[in-house]
Image (cartoon, rainbow, N blue to C red; front, side):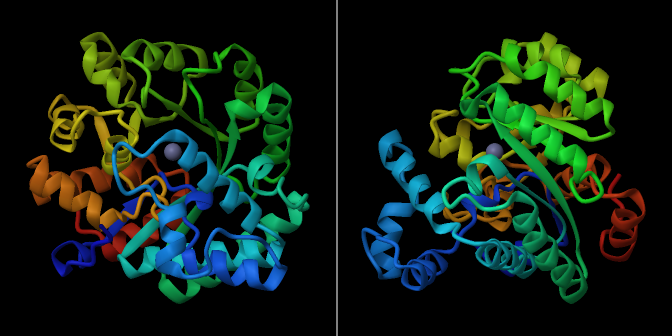
Length: 340
Ligand SMILES: [Zn+2]
């Protein structure tokens, strides 16, 4: 489903919801396994793809979890972290993404091989600096804390992000909203906010509108990851609109994970028409075999948004981007034509 149709490729783009761990090229997994003597179910791209990509809506959860084991085990050194980040920036630049935010969970990504978080961050920063120069793009970083890793992990991640706030723009609470209630995470996330970090929360992906309502009231987030089930309650839609909260929407991801029953049923355009600040993103471009160009194709050709409406989504993403104002404004003025 990767799409490089010039009709979409030529448009300058923003992306504000993309997971580093879900963006590792299959060839890179193979190269790393050879270099570090790791076991893989296959050593050919086409064969390994069957183990590391979700191509059908009904793919079972166990298979997906196994794929994530492979990703975690592939992150073997800060040099590998740098390579993965660089390749993601390169793939983003290829689609003409000019404003790009990448997120990663240090406690998950660097846990498999016990990597030093600061050294791994330095690898990402080297890749970022090189990509910003070579591709003339602006890149932002978000630290994820995964609900499934518990409250202590959240505290550790927030403290680390605060210590590195010169480079980390925001924190994101992700993963298992259905399984892990928010209570344990409110205090550390609010601490991040108090320290000047921005906040985005995965909510309303596989949970009802009420979860978004509770999230907005508990965390006062700047943005919400997904948030698509807000459409089920106009009270929640009104709340998002009143507070100007931006949704980071990932249509193809929502379809593959059964968060919407069919891609045609995706509420992206409905939310847009209701005045919610929606943006268009890829989530896990390698795992889900998608890219922002593909998400634009879905928005345009399946959900019926116009190119002007898609340009407005880009403006929403620019306005809500956590990247420093001067850096994002420079890129915006240079590449994006203003959308009304
Ligand atoms: Zn996500």
